[in-house]
Every structure is written in structure tokens, then in C-alpha cells.
Image 1 (tube, rainbow, N blue to C red):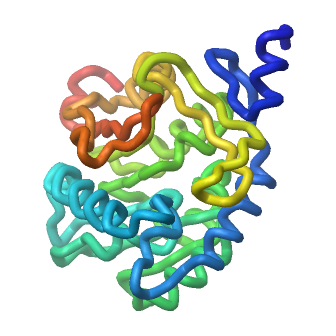
Image 2 (tube, helix red, strand yellow):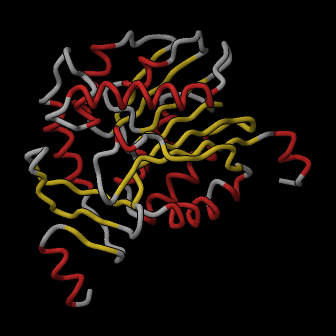
Length: 266
């Protein structure tokens, strides 16, 4: 680490340079977030904007309006929600599907999710890290999925683990599958927040905001190599719902088609 990076890290903000964040601190952060849960404004736990509950509701509504149609849900849809939090996206699945499975590494969030939703044959919630995705699903006999959500999770994974997780995602996905990723990305340069004290959240925060180009390089080595292609992508919010200067919410919709894969010799 050079002198410039060292100075930036003291401030909790590291620009451009690649550095790892600490998962234990991230888990502790979300355990504290779970304590903030309230039924009147449930989504604030994982969508933040603590001082602006109206913004939370508007962002959630916009996200669902944009992304839900891309999932093309039907009665045979098997949905895996990686880093599901309190099961916010399960609330949005307005059509009959075969099954929904939410996974999160914070047990406190999963407890809330189970209290909010029917945990049974068609809906289940599992505690575990995305880095152990294949093992957790195998132990719980969950099989493969044809719809996968990764909403706001890449930012909490270091680069090596992110590649590992995306490779696991491609393994647990059926040959015909849709993967939707929604992620805050860096508008100009990679930004890592490390031991950064957020006045808004009143807590230390750790996250990695990558540029679109960085993410595409990682996708090329993982998802695209596994037969997925980018079907849709774009900015999620307009200016009225984006109140950050250096980052903004972006989405990627990937699709893998069994017939295309067979034709290409995959």
C-alpha cells in the first residue's frame, strides 16, 4: 500500500486501489441493522436511508417495477434469493411459483424473514454465507434454480470470493435460467469504504463499489464463461431517487439457454 492509499484508508475511503473488507465486521453491521427492524417500515433494515422512509418505499417500488418483469415468473419458477435479508423480494413475487428459497449469512435477518413469511414447502429461508452456496443448498436438498436474484450483495464480497460465488451461482442454476443482479456501482472510480463511519447509519460501514467495467471483467471470467449472456442492463433510478454522488444503482439481467449452450458445444 502506498502513502496515498494509506491516507485514504485512514479516512475510511479508498479510491481505485484494490483492498479487502472484513466479513466479520460486515456481519456485525447487519446484526445491528436487524435491531432496527420495525413493521411500519421493514425495508429500511437493508435499504438504509434511515432518515427518509419515503425514499425507501419509492426505491423498493421502482426496483420491483423494473426488475420483476425480467424474471418472467411462471408456476415452474424456482427462485433463489442470495443475500435475501428479511425476504423483501419474496414480498414482490406476485405470481404463483414452484418455490422460493432465501439465503443470508445473518441469522438475525433470517429470523425476521421467517417471522414475516410462511416457512414451508414453497417458501424457505436458510442461514449461510454466499461463499458456501453450493454446500448449503446441497445439505438442505434444494436442487437447482431457474430464477436467481442477487440484490445488493456483490459489494460485500472481496474480488476472489466474488468470482467464487458467481461460479457457484452458475453451478446451482438450471441449464435454462435467468439471473438478476442489482448493485450499487461506482460512477467513475472504484471506491472501497473500510471502517468508514456513516453519519446516516450511525455505524462503521464496509463495502466495495466497483465500476461497470470491473464487474464486466469479472462476469466474463465467470457467468459468461458458463453460458450466460447479458440480456438487459441499465441504471435503476432516475435523479430523484439517486442521492449519492459517487455511486448509483445498476442492474444486469443474465440468461442462459440450454439449446444455445448445446449448439455452442458447452
